[in-house]
Length: 216
Ligand SMILES: NC(=O)c1ccc[n+]([C@@H]2O[C@H](COP(=O)([O-])OP(=O)(O)OC[C@H]3O[C@@H](n4cnc5c(N)ncnc54)[C@H](OP(=O)(O)O)[C@@H]3O)[C@@H](O)[C@H]2O)c1
Image (cartoon, rainbow, N blue to C red; front, top):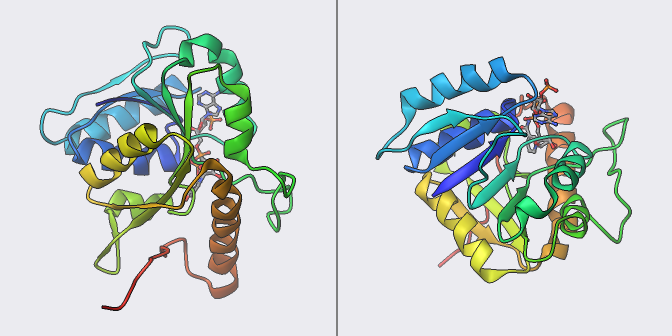
């Protein structure tokens, strides 16, 4: 699978590691081309099973089947508007936690979510999947927390798109947990906020993960 990964920051690095570990090829874009190049070198060093890593710009990129928006809330909306019809038929992954300016609440209204706002801004035929917002960047680089595979909660209205994103997650050695339709992103973004809140309250250093477990 060819994945376009926009944003070569903390999450771009974490998701990039899991993608290339799973043999999936990545095209990296960042507003700072040097940051994209530096991360590309790092990812090439850990790529498995023939995965390739290249860089591009927003203007010249040939979009992959999956486009991951590893950028902040607001920038995600600007980007999908900028790409416009180029996104038709693609699967767009929104990872944002839309935090307010004081980091103690969500900037989105209770009856929507970052992912739903992205879905409202893409052209017809574009599938939007929420994923990765409940996992921290460093744990994605490691691919595990405390010796356990990371759970990646996903939400979306298109089953095929969720299958594609689940495949990328499991290829990378993680567990995909389907939380349901795209409006479940409201709860996932709330869970992301809670996860961030707990880091500060309990001094956890962004090293934790959410795990869905069951008894026999
Ligand atoms: N960090 C986490 O552990 C974590 C966990 C879950 C979810 N998230 C979510 O993941 C998203 C990214 O977080 P992050 O920690 O990775 O942030 P980050 O380290 O700041 O990375 C964002 C990257 O996107 C680049 N960028 C900004 N505008 C761009 C544009 N128009 N086109 C291309 N690249 C652009 C930034 O470049 P510049 O620095 O040059 O602006 C930066 O390199 C946020 O929505 C956050 O809520 C983060």
